[in-house]
Image 1 (cartoon, one colour):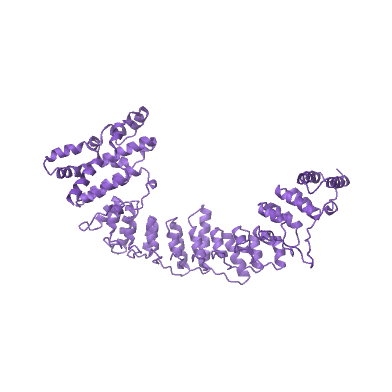
Image 2 (spheres, helix red, strand yellow):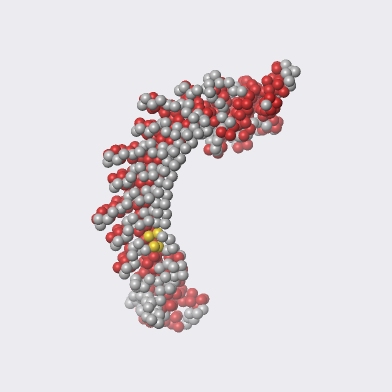
Length: 612
């Protein structure tokens, strides 16, 4: 279609359209789009065909359909928006334009073309939300548009939208390197604070960008400006805190970037001992249990050595924790070892009165290897470990290890001189405090085996439980549902053929299978299976191949069998006492023999109640 025909056709369509009727406008929009697809020759002057309001309606229609072609066509015709003027000759700025609409619809890819049409940068239209054209240009990083606003006095530290987020902050978040350089060169404040107190350096480190940091510092240096590298946000975190908060995440390349940013900040004067609102220094942040990273710890201390900057390795946070406390809480053996080598004090106590050894023993995971390493390092440094130190509640490391059923750690402590003569078993409320059953696979069997291992170890080392203490151990079984019910045995769930086939393949030792175990009542199984084999099996993951109901039933049977000897050893005398010693003890044992562990506990409870 020739230029003349295109133009005449477009005029004809417009004349036939009642612009007040929405459906007719829609038809025209569609015809307009079809015509520009086939347009030949010189482009028209749209104002010869359409009024300003109608052209704006077409642009709104294009934005609604994310149609870049229509916007490009209008821009190429040379059409430029000109504002309406009020009675005194000033432009009317309160007006929602297609630029606002594109921003609201997240059609940011259309903004470049729209700003070619709305190119009066001295006319800063504002919509009903209070959003201006300049704000939209800023938040979308349209560098060439922003530069024009800057020349007209729209300062770079103006606030975007209704927040207090400066343009420089927005540009840093979106990693718009060119725009950042432009803004700084035009006078943007490199130390401007965000609503939460974050400065540009905080944002750069939050968004893990080494290149941006290097460009930021170079631009500032070229302009002979100063950057406050130790600026604190509302939580008193410095940029160094922020950089180290993300130190262990991501690929090797990203982690390397963390190292380099940390070094750059330190060389630029970052304070390695600055404490935030919680009293956490950068070293605390590295050792925090969220994601401890030994290489970063070593790198951090080495860099500070290199620039002859002292790091307070024993700094304490608001809870009294040193970096060593945090590394030990995380169970990070290598980190703790390095901190001790660098002079960390193992005797310092936190707000709970915990020494380093208390912290190790308070872990729900049995940290016996860490305990061994701790004693070894302290010995090498000729540091005497206060193995029987008491915390604010009067608890020793040994009591904490017992309360967490960390029997291997208990063994380490006893071999290192922990005093068993003054030991008192913790109360039930301290046992497994804060334990999350979902955090441990085969939780119930693990708990049962750990409790029995602990009791046997204490007895082996010469500690004699009284009945009240034995009831504390039994209370654990009740608290976590480790008792097998008599009705479980009556259901004969193990007769299922498919289950039996699987159970025969799951070996407890070289000659006895799971199927052999479940065929026997707990009383018999406890006699025919070696305790060591059952304990080893309880910590394995062999039951995982079974269905949930079958797995739970097998676990209950295993717990009942594992603990049978312990419950039985206390029940006979307790029953004898309840019967006022009128029946031979052997008869009491025979009665106890046929009862379930939960029944045996009830007998002990009754006898203890009678004695008190």
